[in-house]
Amino acid sequence: MFATGIENSIPTINQGRTRIDQMDVCYHYERWREDFDCVEELGIQYLRYGPALHRTFLGPGNYDWEFADEAFAELRRRQITPIVDLCHFGVPDWIGDFQNTDFPRLFARYAADFAERFPWVQLYTPVNEMFICATFSAKYGWWNEQLRDDRSFVTALKNIVKANVLAMIEILKRRHDAIFVQSESSEYFHADSPAAIHRAEVLNSTRFLTLDLNYGRRVDSEMYEYLMDNGMTREEYHFFLQHRLKQHCILGNDYYRTNEHRVFADGHTTSAGETFGYSEITRQYYNRYRLPVMHTETNLREGPNGDEAVKWLWKEWANVLRLRNVGIPTVGFTWYSLTDQVDWDTALREKNGNINPLGLFDLDRKIRNVGRAYKQLISDWRDVLPASSVCLVVPIKKPGDYSDEDAAGRPHSWKLHPGE
Image (cartoon, rainbow, N blue to C red):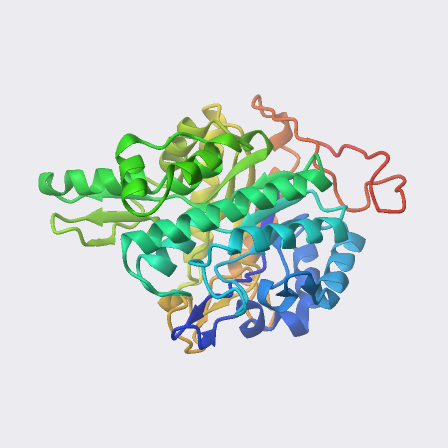
């Protein structure tokens, strides 16, 4: 699945007074048809995409579907398959933030109603980058609740993952063959010195918490004590063990140069840059969860020479091929996002209007060098990959594949595409 995405982050800053809406600042609400044209221009058939939660989910049972109805109808008409991103780093003002224990239940209802309204959708990322969302909101103090303590972090983490699990349950009730593509940050922490080894080990265990809980895997003993010491109850922990839905999931993971960290003896960290790289870190995640893998995000700023992003694209693709060649089932690759982004140079902590040249297209919808390179890569490799000795059969249906539907839009039959 060659994919891209349209960034729909919506965190709040300034103690909730300011919302950062990437679809707004990147002009998607006005130019969404052009954006879909850009997707088609590249030959991309899969799009990480979802309506902005705060504009759609207005209250319990209260929705504004106007934009979603129009956009998703157009995706279906064009036969672009959405991987639906329902919650991306923020919640509506009326929910508050990720400390709200009602969030999982409320979000599950939203997911259920979305699935009923769009029964032809099969691929979902209910909550994007759960680990990053909890960390930036309740550990670093950057977004949403802007807290900086372990108890707040554990509260955000358990609420976010529970919301994801409950959403999967509700979607599966309405679409039994739904597939969930987790888009989770793949992290690694390198010890700077022997005195930093234990701290690095703790952080390398913490990075797995969201996926361990999401997949119903028992956490490491040190992490169990950490969760219990910071507010998770045994009942809450056992909820995750009792709702094991990994058979419906693809392990989607994201990798950027900032995903590897150097840990010092006093506990502070800095970026380590690309040290191990995507394939080695993904191998660690795959060995833990044993699920098909999809590279769900990467990008690099297009520098003054104009070829930095192109070189990074080639390097990440080489890592994906390496995974396949050593027998790890790898089903997709994503350059994220379709267009340039705004204010990610400060991780959305400030609203400065700085354009970050990270997209396949700029904000005037003019193709960048990396967009041309990705188009060529897709053309070159699309018909080669199905011949791989590593074959995963996943019945993914594309919009328009249904030969007949009942009144509720449920398919009576569908067709396979080459390589599926």
